[in-house]
Length: 321
Length: 294
Image (tube, rainbow over all chains, first blue to last red; front, top):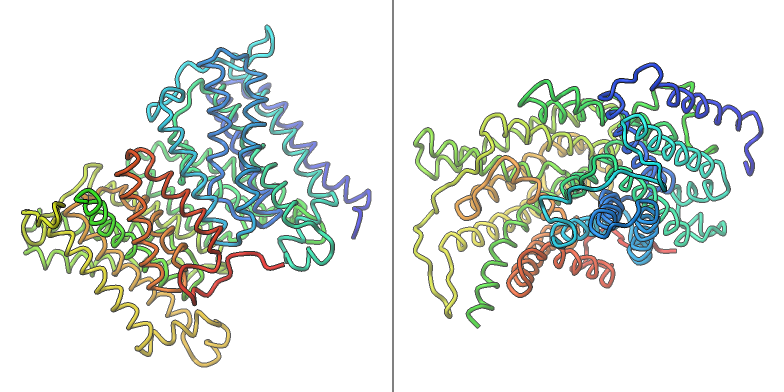
């Protein structure tokens, strides 16, 4: 199928429009600051998981260093605004373009590798980035982190309250989701899916596989960088800890628990994996064990991820997959 | 020169521990194609159990070590049988995430049982360092390197010579055909976890006297072991061990020459370059293609 027919298009856009309408209306129903903060973190994780899903779910390329790009976005924004007094908007622009440039430099050679070797190379990239966050202490504050990062602002308008942060974060998530859905229904989306199916076949069908893989790698890093910028201005602080190997594994988990390769999977996974630790906090001392067990049980009994439980949603991100 | 020798000793010692951990990754990978992210936790469990039983129950040291290895093996078997055995649609990606969940859960239990403080074991044969060419070598380092080599050779002989090992290699080559030949492929997955857990626990008990261990020790060692296994080839026990030695030496020399903060970054940078320039693997027969052939 070369072009989705109009009814499919409507059936795929409608749930997203409805979802975004609900997201826009939530603060009117539940204006409590704690809930808005949790929802803000959910938004950041949904954006991260959606970006990673473009790479892993749509194009079938592994990354175990994705949290490093998230951290790079956060640190570039944080350092430029907190240390050098840049206004947040140009800092954000530099954070995203700088992260993309690094991702391009990393992706160009490493995406020729396959499977576990690609996993190893991306993992190494993540570790190297985290070491830099820790070691460039004069800029980043080292292991204890960078404090006093200002709020996000555009000219005189400053994003101060949880409500304003909520709308800022979820506007970015909305753009990210629309972009991902659009990509999944485009020619490029189908080409990426062909790469996932068989690289040799895709190449034979005229898909420039290496170029597309690098492009989607850079795009997913851009999602992560935006999430990093939002994160650092949201909590006004950044430390190296979330951006290490376990951070990347957590992002991967979000994608798989939600449903890898599905459009709604990262939304569901990102939300669940943000809310779960919040709930488990009540079980002082047991929370790590419970978290691990829940992860095991989910993978045992919902192997396709939670998106597979919602059959009425379009199951695959890419038609004809 | 003494400095060079010192880095060499420390690299070989750390590298042996990484190598032994990598052998565990190989075992599980060759029967299931799963990268077992709980491998590092087996190392931690071995060390923690030995340390706490030795200090609490007053068991003689060799007995405490043996009991720790056996108990870790039991944990490995239970973890595999209860999760992989009951999975619906056991696909590689799902099983890999299950091992991540297992790793987190094991770490959670360790934190509850033993708390957050590091634990210690006495060295096996005295503290007085040997001096070789001006460099100091702890006797425990000899235990570590010697035991690791012994275990690695034993694993390789088991894989090559025993009937179970041959069945495991057959299953690794082609699961479907192996099953048709009457090989119990499912059971081999449990066997591979048992051996991997035992090998991991051995790595834990021999390294704890020098490096200490704590509930969160497994993550890092698992990460290093995984890298070593990839570098050396996931399908090849000797290659994986060699990968561990290379990683250990890289770390020791970069830490010694360039300041310790950057040692991980330098080691990983070299690993990535190694992957890119030698995509066919360090040793032949590593079994898996690393690069896209178009």
